[in-house]
Image (cartoon, rainbow, N blue to C red; front, side, top):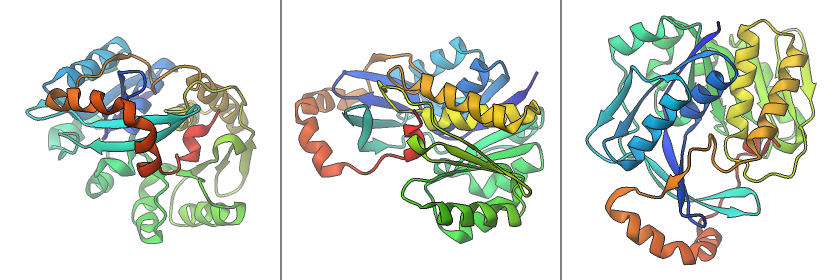
Length: 300
């Protein structure tokens, strides 16, 4: 059985219009999807001792994700306030809570029992990437981070480097992929939402179109694509088959609310009432705070 751990960010995504919160975050999502694909999965991270933390813990347990190294700390669980424009999400505000943490030697020893470990650039764990990659193969999500110095720092450690193609043309994305491969990444996944995805090795590139569906919610689709690609590579599946199955899985994620489901009424502590009171103002907040979504997560 394929064994993959994810270490890093988590959050409860609060859908204001629905009054519901859902477990999420790139690394948490990958851990859940790996389990759903049939792998042995673990999540290493930190949540608060609050209702949001309870929701995340319960969701991971119900998805058969190992939570041995999940910390429960004093302080709030990370949250993100989300509005929607049709099925696309709009980030309104966030708080990282206790989600940023320092890995211990015990964490690193635990990770050595897995074939691969996934980390995302938003997790604040770059200083530990080299140590993690010495224990297992590294999957790293660069998302929309573009600075070449960062790629040169992280790329040499990557088994799978994932990049969002949001806002870049084919030539720009090919240059980034070539740079990552040249500095040592074994595989580079470039996702482009509704334009499909490309998986590069140092000798060949494989392309797949998106599986077009009428989306309910695009949150988590890109993380699904990453998880299925990593899972398939470790199983030594044919790359074209991996991409086809990843596109199908990402499209399926677009058919329900939240990255992994598991809805609960919004409860993020003392500010909950204030947040819900502002739900009626969501449209004006969206206009003020909206930014483009990661096109990778529009992979539907």
